[in-house]
Amino acid sequence: MRILRLFLILTLLLLAVSPDYSQEVIEEIVAIVNDEIITLTEIRTEYEKNYQGLRAQYQGEELDKQVELVKKGLLDGMVTTILLLQEAANLGIDIEERMKMFIDNLKKENNINSDEEFFRILSQQGIDYEEWKGTLKENMLKEAVIVSEVQRNIIIDEAEIVSYHKLHPEEFTELPEFTLKAISFSSDSGNEEEIEAKKREINAKIEAGEDFGALASEQADGPEKEKNGDLGSFKKGELAKELEEPVENLKQGEVTPWIQFRNGWYLLKLVEKKEARLQPFDEVRGDIENKIFSEIAQVKFEGFMKELKEKSYIKILIPNPLDF
Image 1 (cartoon, helix red, strand yellow):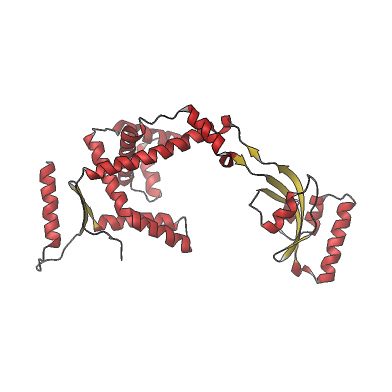
Image 2 (cartoon, rainbow, N blue to C red):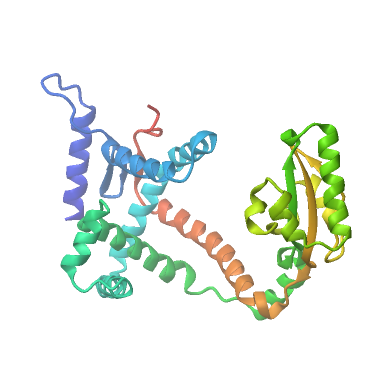
């Protein structure tokens, strides 16, 4: 059967490249992977699905950047998928029961009581059930191969996890965090004398012990006016430098001098400051183990795919099928 399929593929290939002037070429073959083919239509369909997904996440230059990355990696990714699915067949992997359990759990978690209701919900979201199920099956088969052939034998020594925590403290150090209140108003809210008078008035009321939040509600014209002066919490580096630097040396409850920033004036009060903290080993042990595991698994996966490609018949007929 495998020889017959390969014969049919080669026959299609000859039809695609032979100069037959009596009919148009219906399909172009981009690549042959053992006894399967990747067509130009399949490439373009997969690209379109990826493109629509990217449009929902990015725009402008970042969208263009992500689209270029997809174009560069799409063909190789499709070849990799075919090889993994072929390997799943060679290994006799059966995931039908896992799929059934996954779908049953999905329905249960979302309070879906019947297959008909499940189909209807997918349809309402523009999802074809059979196509969704086919994608789920492919993903589960690929995952099963990777677990069986790549991840199963990875063992991480406890000493390696402990050592990583000691050698990379910067990864586990929580940055200082500032919780702030603010009074701000636009530079256009008056002439220079009026603005200076307003600043002096607010300073005097603060020195007299008036509540900072109440003053913000009364005097500010920024978004904090509706929040009793609450500006929120910010980790070091998240605030603009012009605002962060005056705050860093404050003690809890202290207020900055007036800060001119962009098109306005700001008075900031430090409500709370959390100092930098190195997370103890017990808090991050699991994260470290997962990180080390992922790094080892990635290297082993690349080696596995290299071997799989070397023992397979792969012919790329159109190296850049998305150059259009």
